[in-house]
Image (tube, rainbow, N blue to C red; front, side, top):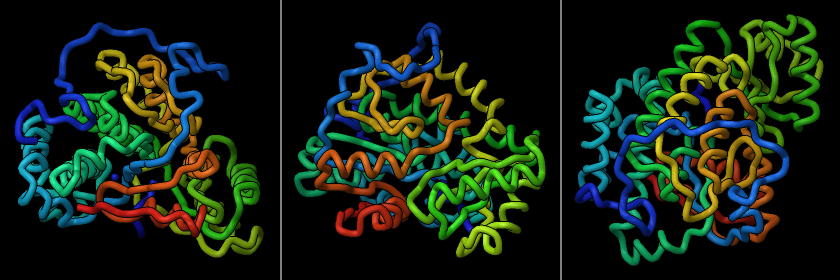
Amino acid sequence: MKRGVDAEESCSLSFSTQPLLLSSSSSSLPLFSLSTTQTVADAKFADYKPINAFFFPGQGAQTVGMAVEVASSVPAAKKLFDTASEILGYDLLKLCAEGPKDKLDSTVISQPAIYVSSLAAVEKIRAGENGQALIDAVDVACGLSLGEYTALTFSGALAFEDGLKLVKLRGESMQAAADATPSAMVSVIGLDAEKTAALCAAATAEVGEKDGVRIANFLCNGNYAVSGGVRGCEAVERLAKPDFGARMCVRLAVAGAFHTPFMAPAETALRAALAATPVSQPRIPVISNVDAVPHSDPDVIRDILARQLTSPVQWESTLKTLLEKGLAKSTEVGPNKVIAGIMKRVDKKHAIENVTV
């Protein structure tokens, strides 16, 4: 099976132009459903004009050996891993360096590992020539699923420690939801979104709503991840090529049906944690996976992060919107080159650089 593509010198180190936010207690704040019209508090970035983007990877980008070099050569990156190990209760850098692969690939470990490794890659940029200027020039950030947390930390909306605690809980809660109700994900290759949706409808009609499936990740034309009950995913695999003309299906090595109602218990747990987590207005737009637009109201950001677990990832819309708005420069920051590969499928002419670890 293949992996999914859906993954400081001191405490004053920053991931934006401001000092790194430190964890603090906060009273619970109200959460609410988003409407189609943004409130004034949430509309700061409504007319954003992206020029220079940082993209952060999600679960599936992890590889054994990642972040070893940057942790040994950039003290700020090593400090991130030291802090993370204290919060997590295990040696995260050792797991990144040595694995074993099956443990690093697990939802519970891979999500914190990718979050910290990606922010270590930011420190790699900062430590290089004109590094801070390169960081300051970024005017929009995006992250694929899990990567949205990394993007929000980079933007100053989340403190590093708070973001890590949320990611830890996110991974644990997703694993628990998957263990409670068996489910799966399948990558469907070679169909457009309309045909993939029709395939999902046919599979669901065959197995029933309880084991039904839907598109969970709108990655790019010809590559959509379908998520749902195990029987539904088996039906997708059986019907995709002969009945719908798909090139192939790949069962993803993930814990369960991410970005569907199967993750409702995880959403509940994460929503409670988000309510008690300090969230600031991002300094730059961070594009949401749920609706492909940036948000500036901390309450809306909390709500949309919780909803992300049970909502389809609108990555294809995110990339197309950025390009239509004039995006000129893109950099994927973190392990592997998953997002660069997707970008090539969306627009072959748009160059994307990679800062890997």
